[in-house]
Image (cartoon, rainbow, N blue to C red; front, side, top):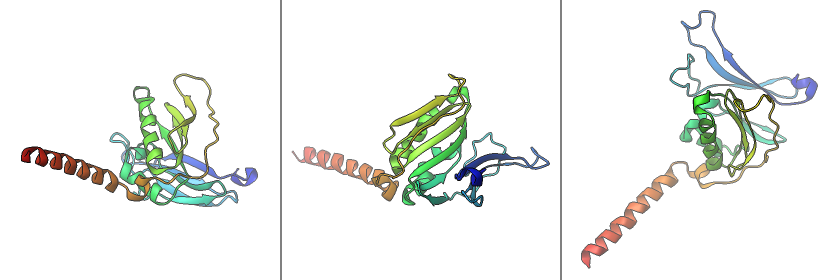
Length: 198
């Protein structure tokens, strides 16, 4: 199909071994290029506590296309700012996220992932089974959304920017918030010290 349609194709899978659930499975995404070659596979790095899957390598992979630099992680992986900051450091333009939620955490879990797009300056498309699918730009502006529980529609279409925005967090990671906290303590300490002298 990738060859016939001349597209990049991301295939999201849950792989179960023969003796599942005695042996844990894998949640993965496989990317295929327009020539039909497998670019790479990524296994979910941070399984949710109830997931019967083995965690994958905690390393974000990317590939370059005419549409920008692409990366993918899976669902719960987006909840880990330091992990997703790898994408910011690798200058990812678009993050494509296969996911699956449930009614009680919809739309909150998807909305949390917008923060990772803003922090790291990439556009994000999160396709969510049984939850809120969302496409946002690098400012967190919603470009398209589709709620599994509010529509019978199964297809979401969106145009997203193909160039990233530079952000302080993408280059400095958690150092920037720590510098801000230290600076805040310094300001409070200086003000308190001066008040005590007066």
